[in-house]
Image 1: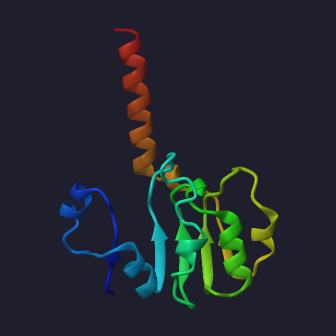
Image 2 (image 1 turned 45 degrees about the vertical axis):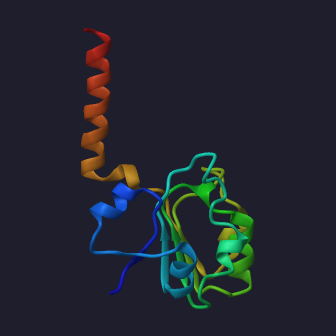
Image 3 (image 1 turned 180 degrees about the horizontal axis):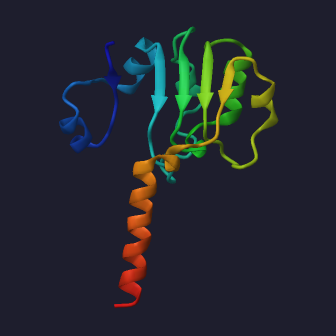
Length: 139
């Protein structure tokens, strides 16, 4: 598989030499599967907008497992209804735990619960973080 990537953080680019980093528009126009992995902040709110969706290939699969707020859900629903893209896989939504009911009606959308914090490694890391905070409080 040929992996294209895009990032604005030079350290991420330096750490991931096995990926071919390209301009975002090039990535969107040439990828069969697009996965989104960015934090939610004021800069990234609705980052994946109608304009970006318009550059996806017609048979593309779009996956968002980062944060719901980075995707313009109305634009995503519109593009899924029009069948411009093949499929969407989502485990994050803007108004969790509420999900826009339009997603549930779409046959070309897979919805799962956000499982990022449910791995053994994540639970260990979270437990260590909490223990550290409690320990510092009582020092």
